[in-house]
Image 1 (tube, rainbow, N blue to C red):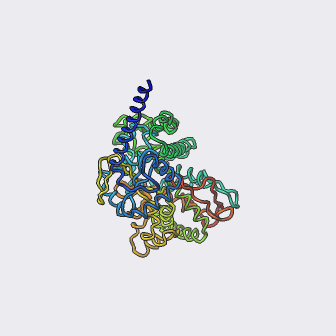
Image 2: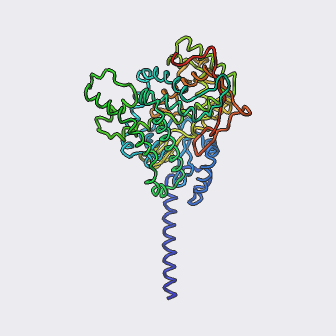
Image 3: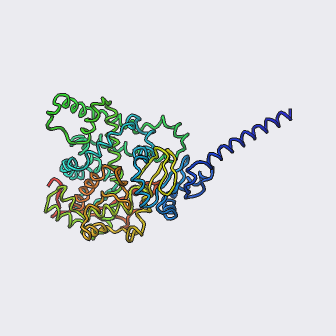
Amino acid sequence: MLALMDDIQSAVFACVAVVIAIYAVRWYTDPINSIPTVGGSSLPGLSLLTAWRTVHNCREVLTAGYRKYPDSVFKIAMFDSWLVIASGRNMIEEVRKRHDELSTTLGIQEALRSRYIRDRQVMTDEYHVRVVKEKMSGRTLQAMLPDVIEEVSIAVKDHIATQGSGWTSLEVVPAMQKVIFQVNNRAFVGPVLCRSKEYLNVAIDFSEHTFKWSAILSVTPEFVRRIIAPFINEAKNDTRRAVPLLRPIIEERMKAQADLGEGWHDKPNDILQFVLDKAIPKEESMFLIVHRLLIVNHAASGNSVNAITYVLYHLAENPDILQACREEAEAKIAADGWTSTALANMWRLDSILRETLRYHGTALVSMNRLATKDVVLSDGTRLPKGTFMQAAAYPLHRDGALVENAHTFDPFRYARMRDADGEGLKHQASTTSPEYIPFGHGQHACPGRYFAAYVLKAILAHLIVNYDLKLGGDGSRPPIRYVLSAVLPPPGGCVLLKERGEGSTTTTG
């Protein structure tokens, strides 16, 4: 009997040894291991500690990797996989050029963990992204802007209540969230629904639930994701809440399209209609149409809220900067009225927006990519099929070799550059480059960035022309939070504002 037990024990040890040997061989022969690791060890088991460090000190880990491996790649640990980081402008430029092998669509889906949050049918054909790319630039965008600019003063009045002639404390994030969602949705669904509190609440909930679950799932091992996936229903439930709000409008438009066809001369010029033009021939369900619209809302609004919050803190903290932006805005409005032309000529306001996106950013990383096949980079690095890749944005934007006084917030940095070299478009907030990637870079840069820049400048111009701003408390800006790779404004942060008298003007004239 003892001999039998010894044989069993020996067999078990042998099996365990074989399993360990197979695992070790697979680990050592995995091409991903040739990519240097930053933040700790890449050895099995120890990589979990590396992942823990990455989660809690992502900014420091990215900066260390950027400095150690310039114009190359390195990897950082997640809890069940590796994230490869493109480091430096030359590698960013290479990633831009390799868009056929490094998919942006699949990269964004991986970054958001979309397969657990969104409807799979939407993911297989993201035509709503093509709609944004085709319609939110050029002439179509210009045709939208008068309505968007008009909506700014309405939204500010709806969501920012001042108290007589005195100072009013404004909690910035929730107020700007409501203003931006309302203004954006003037271009998405039209003037009636964009002012519906119920609809705005659903759109905001969808965006917040998407961010929440994306963050949770990004630090959750794959086997746990599979267990909890059936219970992640908040975004889909938000879609179901929105369907009855949008159904009457959608059905009315479908009927008009069927009855009038090409003779529908007053056809709405908004994102909902552009989505319907694609959805009707596909006979998509009401749920999928609304789901797509809410996805566009999330993409267009979340980062804009954070960006405008940082700008407002800087303006409230620096009265000289505020006054310089106000004088420019008033001069351009006097010359061209509340128009896209006036907004485009507000170089100081555009400069502070671009500097905010450079200095603070809305994320520590950018340019989500997923390798659709084995890829060999110019330096010989091999990326196996399925490799998830991002670019290190935070250390790039703080690189003193690329940006003069990179660790100083210089609000009019880019306005001076426009004056100096006469290349206005090059230094706009919405223009990307290998050194400036808050919107990504290249063919697959954020397609809604031109619209977002106009919206942010319209809201900021309205606020600085019509209100005085200052910081409350001890007069210092509340600190920014870093959560995983996200850059977030502090919860509960406030500015003080009061209405200006003579000289103020609304976007409705």
